[in-house]
Length: 493
Image (cartoon, rainbow, N blue to C red; front, side, top):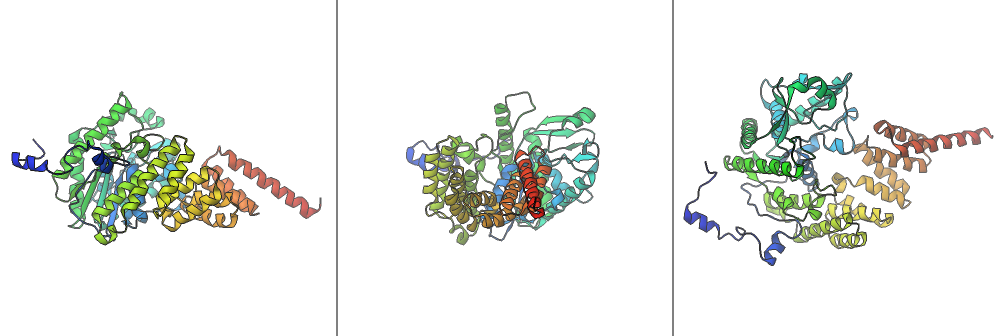
């Protein structure tokens, strides 16, 4: 059955739209395909800056929520926190809430909202003696005791329950390959590790999801949210442009990735057209139609921060109140386009060109992502004094949510501003108390300030997080040597 039927007159009237034809002329390409591609979209609803936004999905959802939060939007992710013993630093910590398949999103919402539904504790994986993984979270998380895994699980379910306070839900769909347990009749969010394949491999299956599978799950999600959210709730959905890390389907990953994105995009089109309160946001098209050197990180899989930000700014301009949208002018959009060119030059090793482009992008720009990238490039080129100046501007403009504290502390330390570096690295430690790179830098700063005991304690924490941490081990040796020298001076020997 067709998704939509137009009369002949309607169809030809639609062709009068200036964006209905592919941009073949240079002036059209300059407006829509140069830099980060800018496909048009027409919002069917409006938001205010105070409307709570709940983001669910793959790592692209984490990117979106970080930039929305920096722009001052009311993002639900800011309400989620874990006690220190449940926090995970580095990439795995950022990935903690990633939901890669649509059934994983459905699971979380069902456990949080459906009467009588609860998290199935029996599905936990014991990957080492008395050490468990929650297969409904990210696979990179280290195993913990059953008690700690269930404590984190309860916090996550409680947080998902707060979706009822949100006016807008943002969903990004990631993968069309999903792991399924026949015994418990449930989908997982990660691939089974070797220990589980050995003990329970006969119960597990890889499902290559179909259009009907995905659409049915999306419709169940919509029904669940419609039952529990306020009558005026809205949904914004897209497909993540982040490439799959690998495929289990015995095909070329490039081919498997194309199927994964295409089948989800097709299902989303039908989903959007069948409900009145859903918009599709074309961030997927924006990224995949852009020059890959501008749109993607060096791994050619993850989306570059500036490309995400360009899309989020366009989204907020269209959806929020006009007064707020006026805060983002065209100069900022141009700065982000130049930022991506600078990023591409830096990836290609043309640091002089990159630095020049970053400087142009930062002239007159208050965008924190522009300033953050510029400051990091200066730091990489051994210009810590100038880097510290730019990164301070980035922090003042709200780059704290974009991870400015660590590079700023490094720049301050490198330029001899050690006391100020101590204050900034303390903020980074508060956010990422277990990240080895943050702990190493904090330990070096403490050591140079003569706080040897604190430095040693931080270095030990770093080794706890990363046992093969050579830098931390060397610093502990320096601390011990310094302590021995101090003892000799006190004793007069």
